Image 1: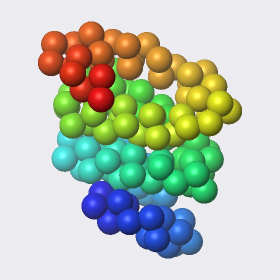
Image 2: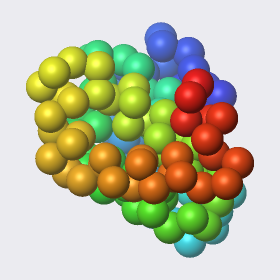
Image 3: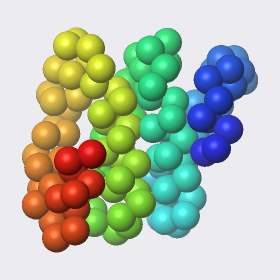
Length: 120
């Protein structure tokens, strides 16, 4: 996940076809693996050149599931960040909303202790 903070590595990941396996890790049962994959995807989602590829890999649905599952605060935090990073243009916002992201985000903000995270 730390490597995906470096924008220059985004292209290399795409060229080496690393996105599909990374997206697959976001639905693993192991919460550490899932959390790191979701954090990596959140870091990738800041890149406008990668955003459409993330949508094509259907990463929104695993993010919604991570939000709704309540299994891990870290998974929820980075899933929300991934969705926020994806929704940077009106077209992408509509896609994220159409896929059902609003209600899990609203529900997350209603959880005890999450209110301060939702404001930031």
